[in-house]
Structures are given as structure tokens and as C-alpha cells.
Amino acid sequence: MTEPTGRRERKKAQTRQSLADAALELFLDRGYDQVGVKDVADAADVSVTTLFKHFPSKEALVFDQDDDLEAALVAAVRDRTPGQSIPQALRDHILLKQTQFAVHTTDPRFADFTRMVQETPALRDYAHRMWTRHEAALARAITEAVGAPEDDISCAALARFALEARGLILRHAEPNRAADEAFALLEHGWAASHPGG
Amino acid sequence: MTEPTGRRERKKAQTRQSLADAALELFLDRGYDQVGVKDVADAADVSVTTLFKHFPSKEALVFDQDDDLEAALVAAVRDRTPGQSIPQALRDHILLKQTQFAVHTTDPRFADFTRMVQETPALRDYAHRMWTRHEAALARAITEAVGAPEDDISCAALARFALEARGLILRHAEPNRAADEAFALLEHGWAASHPGG
DNA sequence: CAAAATAAGTGCAATGACTCAACTTTCGAA
DNA sequence: TTCGAAAGTTGAGTCATTGCACTTATTTTG
Image (tube, rainbow over all chains, first blue to last red; front, side):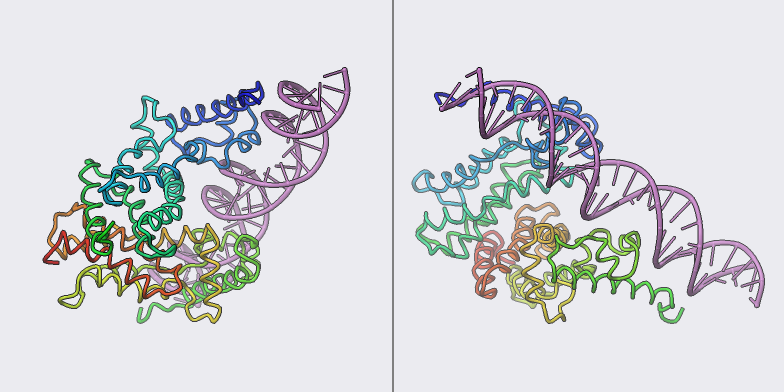
């Protein structure tokens, strides 16, 4: 058990990668709704059943694991530079991660990819679900950072609003400005109820 | 053409109602995912094809038309009592409409209904989509009320956050307190950037 | 009023995402 | 080297949703 790299796991990862690659290729080419799951499976030369052993849904073919996303979010609050407010820390973190959320960041057709996600309802919703999945964890991180009771509502509200702000930022031409204005609202509101934070 | 009440339209409305009733009954009884569209159609004694002529999807069987929802939201901002802030007006409106959003408000099993919606992902998502569908209209109403440019970001942010606050309010035991705290955040943040509003 | 347009409703077949139940192949570990 | 678990396959099946051709009832109109 030195390294978890048996031939088996390598082949599995390879199959998975083939599927993701084939899917991205086809989706960008013909459009998400114009490509069937069977097309993807055929292109990757596996059966449809195998495809669903690797990805839980058609939408999941497009997005990568976000296992570390929650940890990063929590860390952004917990380990923020001293003196920085929680809304500020979240603003920075979201602006930073905004481009890293999608799978194939290295793909040259990244702009096409982003546009496709925003224009395809199924993908847009899925991305939103994946992103807001960690709202509870973020809320808990905030309550801990500020010493509030576990079920404090303003902390839960800040968590939700901060995550929802991402959608506003993504669709505006000037992400930085959008982030500034959206988070300024949260910043001031937060400062009013949490003078010490 | 005195009243728009021909026999045809009456029968149509009746069929629609039968479907909604049968669906609610079955869903509450067995659970949304344990009931097929065919079961609902059979219970209402119509064909599946007919069901989909009346409702665009299985989820839509559970929720009523929300044609006036957008208008009410816009009016809540436009016609708020003088001196009241926009966040306050939205807080009041959301607390008021919170119970009226679902179809069968008069049904005695209303609590069961709400719980079911919150516990069934498909329904939870659909309700959220229906509710946030008018975000753009709300944002426009806010920009107009405050005289900001059409694409003002803080107005768009307030619109989104206010609508998202509903989810927070719904899941807490004390809706009024939850609404107070969540909207206090928006209230202070909004006051900071819009002193005159 | 008769006939022609209109709309509700039906049955059936098909698509597309997803699941399930066997079965085969291929590694990895003892 | 043998044995079991994991990867993969095949094929049938479920479920929501749509399209098509058809019947039936109700309007509308000439």
C-alpha cells in the first residue's frame, strides 16, 4: 500500500478521463442538449452503464470533484488575514475560485465552456447546486469564527448571501466591480450587527 | 361573451382541478417519488397525455399559477408606505406571502404539504425556481424606486438576497425572528449605500 | 339549423436519462 | 496459483415527457 497506483486504478481513472474528455468535446461541439449519454459512451468506447458507474448524472460529466471546495471555503473564513472582515475574506475567496470551479480550466476553449454552462439551464442549475452545497459548512465556520451560537441567523444569512453573490458576479462584465458592490452591502450590514468581527 | 364561462372552459378547469387534487392526495399519501404520473392520471380518470396538456411537468401539479406574484412583488416595493425602507417592505411582503405561495392553502394538511416540499429535492428546487423567477423584475422595480441606473449592481444584489432570504425564513421555527435578523443585515448594508432610500 | 372550425381528450409509439440483475474479464493479494 | 473483489458488459426495464394520428364534444358561422 505504498502509493494507491495499481494498474487497476490507473485504468479506472483513464476510463473516467476518456468519458469527461469525450463529453466536453461533444458538448462544446453540438451543444449539451443535442448530445445523448449514449453518444458520450460510444465516443469513449464504453457502455452507458459504465458511464453511470463513473458519473452519477449527465451533468456531472462536466464538473469535477469539489471535495476540497468546502474545506477551502471554511479555511477562507477561519484563516483570513487578521483585521480582515469575514465578508471581505469571502469576497476575495470567491473571486479567486470563480475560475477554478469548472473542470477543464486548462482547456483553451474555456470561454466557450463558461458560456455553455450559463446558457444551458440544466448545467446552470447543477453548477449552482454544487456551489451552494456547502452553505451549512460555511455558516458553521462563520459562527465559530465570531463566537455566535450554532444556529445564529445572521451568520446563516451571511453564508447564503455570500454564496449567492457568485451568480451576480459571474454574469457581469466587470467581476471585480460587481463583487465590490455586492459585498459592500454585506460588509456594512454585517459590521452593524457584529462590530467586533 | 358576457363572462368567459363556456361549458368547455368549465370542463377544462374541472379536469385540471381533478388532476391537482388527485396529485396532492397521492403525493401526501405515498410520497412524491413513490407516485408515478400515470397514477395521478388514473386517479383523475384521464390519460397521461391529457395530464401534460394541463401541467407542463410533474412538479407543476403541486404549485399553482404565480402570474400575480411578480406584480405583487413589484408593487410591494413601488407602493411601500412612505418612510419605509425597501428592505423593510420586502421583509413584510415575503412574510405575508410566504404561506400563500403554495397551491392548496386551504387544505388542512398544509403542514404536511410544506414538509413534503422541503424534503423532496425535485419539489424544493422547483419551488425555488418559481420563487426566484422574478428576480429581474424585482431588481428593476428597485432601481426605479431609487432612481439608480438600470444595471446597478447593489440593486440587483438586494433583489437576489431578499428573495434568497425566504429559504432561510422558511426553515426556521420562528419565521418572524429569522426574517428580522436576515433583513437587518440587508437593511443596514442598504442604508449605507443608499442613504436616501 | 347545418356544417365547418376549434379545442379537449385518447392511444400509441418513441426518446432519453437512469437503474437493475446477471454475467465475464481482469487484477491484486494471500 | 488461486480466489475474490472491482471494472465492465449486455439487456431489459422504469419513468417523465413529447409527437402523431385520431375521436368526440362544443362553438362559431354561414
